[in-house]
Length: 263
Image 1: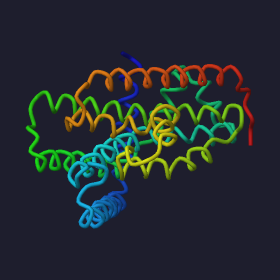
Image 2: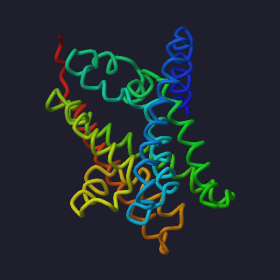
Image 3: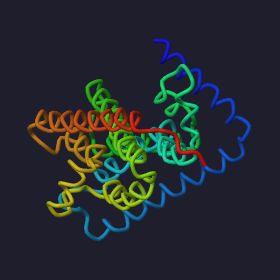
């Protein structure tokens, strides 16, 4: 409980620091709204002539897109800076995490906060619920429970992938280049249902880099596009667990290997 309280105390401190840059927040907020609006507009233009994309309608794709966006926004707000682990290791500043009487992982996770990215989270939440309404899906307690669980799962998937890849820095001193190379994969999963891609790509985004677990498979369940929901629930839980184990293993091995590199 003390660690949890400390985490929230550090987050509050980050919020106070951020309050000094309100104009930057407002500019970033409206910028993200324009970017997301443009993406949805492009989807509409594409489906204006084709009407459906591999049996996915416009509003179903919007729901899929916005679910991804809400998870990405929340993740970026609180956990995107985990990728800075590479910089800490290269510059030797990771040493200070080890010297303090607090978990190094807790210090890393609470080091920064990006309030601007809450725009993506908010836009995604509103967009997904509006799309569900346009699809005549009843917003029941059961639906909202599944929707919230899907967002929690999506944030976990993003963070687990980022954390696991970042831990590679303990051996290579570099990991961000690997993360940057996944951007196109992320964008493809965000904008389109992965059912339109070939089997190799679906395997990659389901098992190796499971971004499909962020929005595609939860969308299948929430939009009732599959009959046997529990199969997908078990698959999502299993992959989540595997990535959690991988991340924990790499972190522990990395801590034992780290000697401090200096600048």
